[in-house]
Length: 115
Image (cartoon, rainbow, N blue to C red; front, side, top):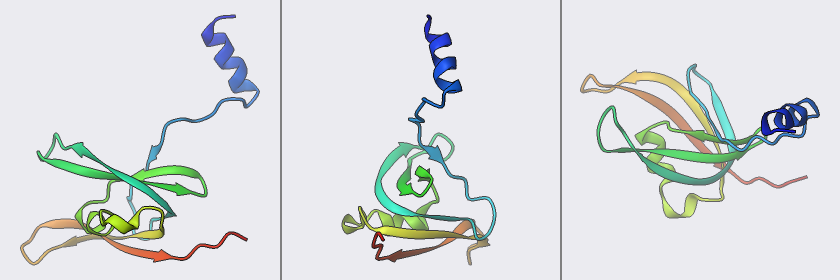
């Protein structure tokens, strides 16, 4: 059996495991990500120069990464945040006093106790 056939057989039997992490796109107001914060990774920004941060969470649906921007970065990049549980809600696009558009978020942490 070759690799492709073995993969198709494993897929048919439900024996494959997703190894990639989904990057969640906040597209509508009230989009929400809830989970345990696992960490952040800086990535180069080809569009704007410099870098941006991708934050990864363990959620009820498995690991998810988000790249929401500075508002959330300021909270999650603090040293003591890793391992805490957060709810991050997209509040929509807004305009600053200087006329620049940005994505606004509400970041909440809470104590999670497994039942």
